[in-house]
Amino acid sequence: MLVNGDSTTGERRAQLTALELPDLVDLQFSDDGAVRVALEEIFASRTRIEWQRKLSALDACCEPVLNLDEVRSHPQVAARRLIETRESGVEVRPAIPLSEGWRRLDAPRLGEHTVEVLAELGIEGPQLEDMKTAGVV
Image 1 (cartoon, rainbow, N blue to C red):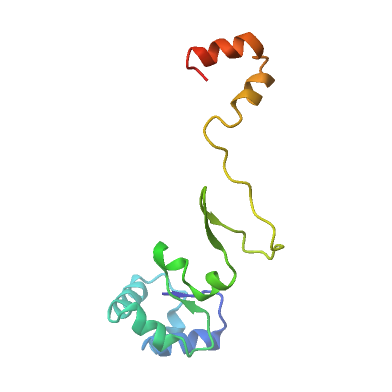
Image 2 (cartoon, rainbow, N blue to C red):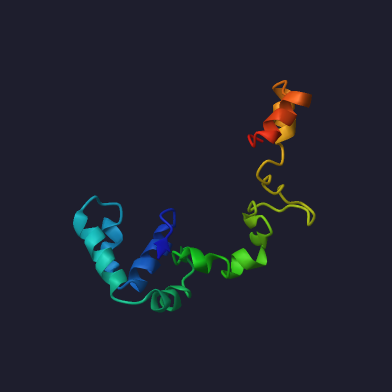
């Protein structure tokens, strides 16, 4: 679970109380390794789903760390249509509002722009045909 480090003191107190670690409120910015160990131990004591249920009622920023396979079905990602499967593969859209018709161009197919690139290098006509015959292009 990720608990936002920029939260207010009240939110941090609520988070640490929900984590059953109210004694850590005054140590939250400490470099003491014991704080990290306490957090690791408490998070290991329950499943991610149990923590989601327990922490979802808080008025604080706290979200689970998702596996890649879970990201597509996350309500926020799905509602914003941030991931789309296209013929060219999986497309991750920018997380900013764009018009419905916007999308990036598909990646070019193998060799799709070869003739244009070679022409820019001065390879055209018979020289290009020779390369095609030889299987270079």
